[in-house]
Length: 429
Image (cartoon, rainbow, N blue to C red; front, side):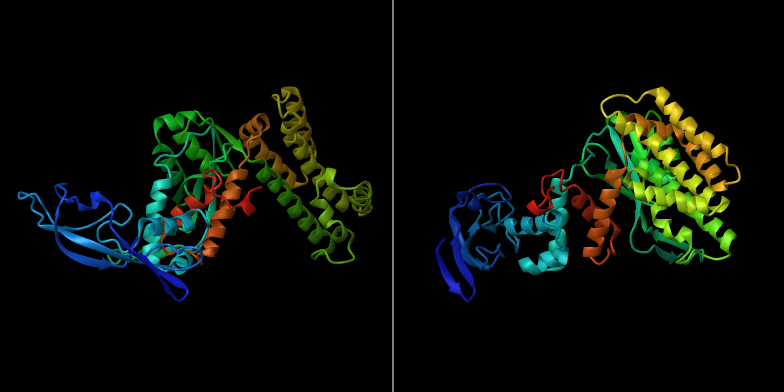
């Protein structure tokens, strides 16, 4: 360092080269001893202590000492400021880090560090290439789920005159369902070919370590997994099973209300007073609330009793799913699982006049293998849902993405911050 000058709210730092390696010819590596002239450059540097720092690098241009070298002269360069660089390596890395690890947008990183959007984006891509693994980390269970952001992009083919899909709004994410390693990969599309293509492209050793694949009630995902990972067992997420039961209960309540009143339920109707209690779990209801639910529906006659039966069917299904929690450290008793399944199926079969319950029972029967695997393992797709929330939040902060590759890269960095120990203190729970 030569000297430091005050410049308003910032500093002007004059520096000179002390590294002997800077006099080595970049072509042949021979150390030069003959100076040609002097140059002054202004590489941008990180702020220090809340104040901007302007570098003034007084460097030399040297003649190459090797006669056979095609390079006649060269300018000094160091690792932190390569030849032709207008930013220091520290500033470039910080620009990439604040986007990938701190969750800032590219434009905000550029404003904070005084660089342009393309420069900040290039720094982010370079930083992401360094911190993200080339291959997905090994895991025993993979979660698959889709998320939608933005609108699809269509373009008319001038030769055929048909509109072709250029960019799909749906993205399918693959996450570590048990190890907390975040997003493993992402592909565009919402079909079996996209899922199977990504899984098939992974190394054979990685595929052999995957024992379970957690999905929602999606036949497309199930077909793709059976094609790409025939040895893996499919696990159906319990949340989506209960969600399906709640949906059938709501459909049945609306259908019977229209049949009974010829209109939607309104304030003053008994079914309107208990509509929220129907969505509650039995263990979350107080004794008084449970008594109100049963008495109000029973007093409504056959119409109310059928709604109460649908609520009981939903609770019988939840009793079946809860067996995994009662046996957190041991394999659930097969006889207990069989008995709970029989109670639910028999209850629905005895009420063929309620098509919603019949459909629910048929769906559970069709997906029983995956439901049974959930009861045995307790694996859920919660990691996928959590990652989808982070991905949507990242897209909101960016006010949407035009470049889908950039969207996937930002999503990958955002969902792996916890695994890379880059969460800020207020985000750690």
